[in-house]
Length: 60
Image 1: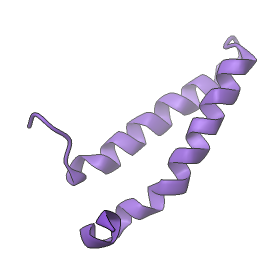
Image 2 (image 1 turned 30 degrees about the vertical axis):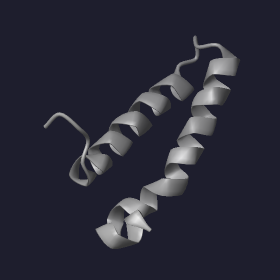
Image 3 (image 1 turned 90 degrees about the horizontal axis):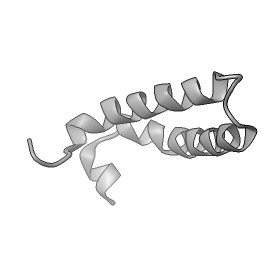
Image 4 (image 1 turned 45 degrees about the horizontal axis):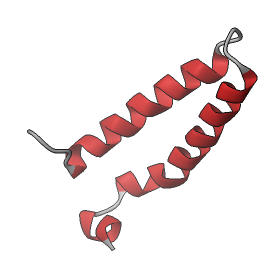
């Protein structure tokens, strides 16, 4: 497909969370980058539970 669909959203969330956790756990990474990655992770985790709901709930 040429555009993202709802069926790919969970895979994208998981991919992003894995990458962010790698950055957060990397002891060589700059603390500022780690803090930004942690903030991004928290934002994703805020919306992650919505991926388990019906499409109509997500759309509203």
